[in-house]
Length: 346
Picture (spheres, rainbow, N blue to C red):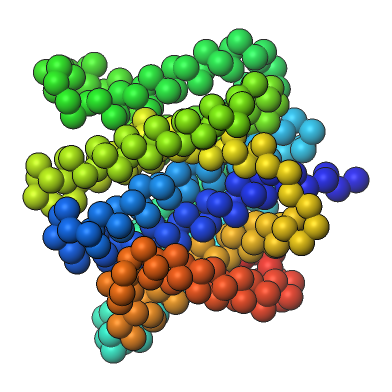
């Protein structure tokens, strides 16, 4: 019997893909404006409230992939899940290489060979890094599933606490005194972003399994506090450096963690019905395709001179993001009817 869809997880994935679009649309406004200018601050705001995109995707993945009720033998993992992800990654990475060559008129034997080598060496379009992370998440699934299946709540909370200290808190404070004075092995205690991502999958499962009592007001406070840390920290650090400082925008930071946790709590507390459920479910199903293809449309719009700088960023960023979402969902509507493509590429 096919498991029933969790609408709140679909809502999380919908919010995550919308956030991805907001981040990428606001980027030109950050790189092309003076630090502290109205446009720069507006784009930084959009960027700051959207940085929980990857953590939310990871949490949603954990909520689904770590469910002991969903069998995942090694044969299925290495015979279907990982090959599907790897095929999609290499296919779309190659498409982006070819698209850039066509866009810039540089197709010849040397550029094709170079592009082919870059695809094989994982030198891909920047946003595809998430799939690189997911390959590692998949590889660790037999271990993380074992932990959630046989470990009790206290053990999982211990693991999450350790992850928060070394994968979230330490990376955030490492650039500040007195942590800058540390040398040697203690500097290496910090988890890098890729391995720390696995912790978000465990967090997603923990929140679904044990449903800790987090009130709507608490979720909202965490969301607002996270935005203040992310936005305020980025503004302060950038003003001091005279250019964009992305330290507080990193996904494995305290501010983004709070935004992700608050957003998750709000999504879980909402009760959708009727058309809203159908819209959220469809966007959730299309989210992988939207993620994979939206940069094609973004680059096309940039070639036409349409970007966050085309007008007031408070308007242009959400409008262009909505356009990209529509285009991506349109591509999904087309490709999802092609059996082989639907199974392996979107």
